[in-house]
Image (cartoon, rainbow, N blue to C red; front, side):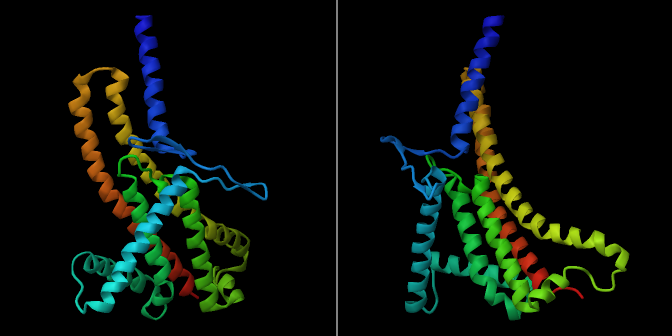
Length: 274
């Protein structure tokens, strides 16, 4: 009995290592028929600037977007009515503009922030979908990546509020007008903290949703190796396929939610209630 328990524990450790290896960042990438390729380790002014697996995935996502949007631009010049992929990309651009930017920021100011919103949407969607490709990785499952995206959203919010209301007017407008002065010592710190909780929520929401989905998929497949029996394979594979299909939907939804909330926060900063 004790030997069986030890064997199960060892299998569990192997399974957990398999799961963690495919979720966390690393200094190497694994390619079929090639094996592990170690990435360069860089130090710039004492700061670790090493190229990691998730950095490579972000580069791949950026290159894919560059060529896709370059194709869209070329077809816009030659075709009056785009078809196929350019037509689909143009529909997504129109959706982000008409259903996200304009309703939340306003028709007058939406075009200022549309490039940022489109970049965030397409980049997050590309990183999310890349995580579904075998031997690839989900960069948005790394909290450092989502934190960087949240910082970009935070900067866009502050720039929008300051450009529209002025530096002092924007920060003065954070506190509702007509508020009784005894409440000011309470409301001012709360509103100031609120500036940072919004991007923090963007960061954690995207990271948690993308990481959790892959952990569930790998855990289901890992049951086959942990239990060391093929009897659970049909059930594990069936559930893993179902969760994978759900992950495709989640990849789109999370890109939409991040972009939508960014637009909402920018709109709140631009059009403050006085």
